[in-house]
Image (cartoon, rainbow, N blue to C red; front, side, top):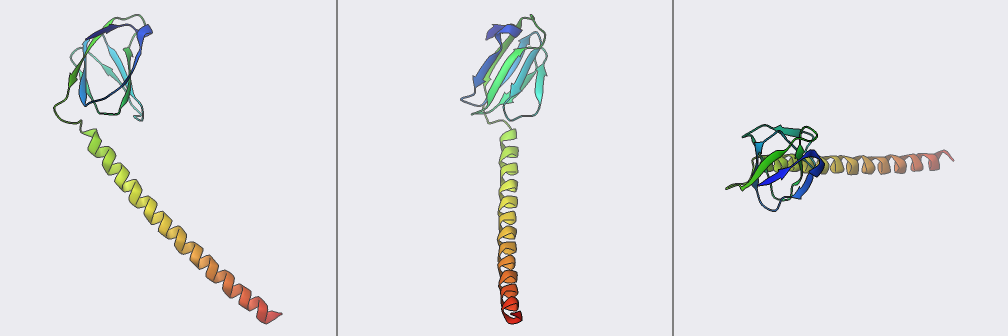
Amino acid sequence: MSLMSMHQTQHLLITEPAWLTALGGRLWVTRDGDLNDYVLDLGQRIAVGRGDRVTVGAWQPGEATQWTWTPAAEPPRYGFLRAGVALAFGAASRALRGAADGFAALARSAAAIASRAQGCIS
């Protein structure tokens, strides 16, 4: 358990899945790569996963806060969402690469036809 104020904002690298729970005061939590910031009131908690970089501090300047760190029995749910998004972007990337290769082949074919036509004209 840690006691902190806004001037003691902490930056943490998460080494195992866990729950971050506010025990006193309002706690501000932000995670690298997450567009949302979270404000936890007394008793509220947020799941954090292995490899997350988290910043924790008091919501109001000078407010003392208490929080606790509890290991999670299972990984947080958003890990599956990240994996799904990565899979979708990977598939889209491969499809776009295939389309780009197709257009490049079409351009080479058109250039060859134009070159032959120019040779016939001259």
